[in-house]
Image 1 (cartoon, protein in one colour):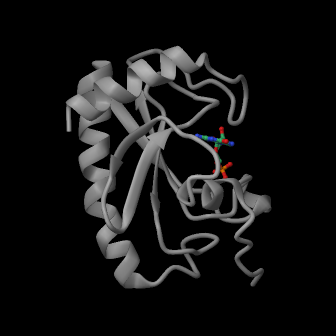
Image 2: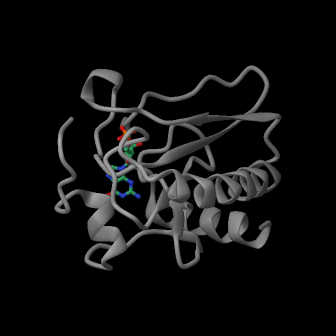
Image 3: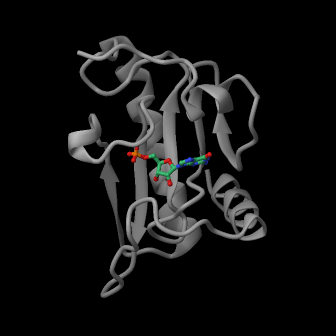
Length: 139
Ligand code: 5GP
């Protein structure tokens, strides 16, 4: 198993070294907008504790993370008027992981609207800021 590298981009976000469009934060968890959204309202929920993925995460960390993923998913669906959502989590490059700090993707989906490509196009920052505000308000 590869080890955790604290130079990854989400570790930098957690240390405040680079900005994010924040939706929710508590002692253990951070939720923020994905900058290359596969769907309107695509956001990420991450534990503050370091792990590359699901397999090296402490189960007590997962136990705190999942209720927040549920809460943020509910708010993202409400804020976007989605008909459903996907919860995705990639482990290692072979499975499509590109940032090696555990994260859940929340992907609000509307009937008949396909997802955009994974790590496709950067969204406009004003749009992401507005969406973060709307999801946050729906928490
Ligand atoms: P993974 O491919 O590891 O499952 O997901 C990483 C996600 O992080 C991708 O969906 C990608 O769009 C997103 N991402 C990459 N760099 C940044 C960044 O600097 N800030 C934010 N908010 N998201 C990022």
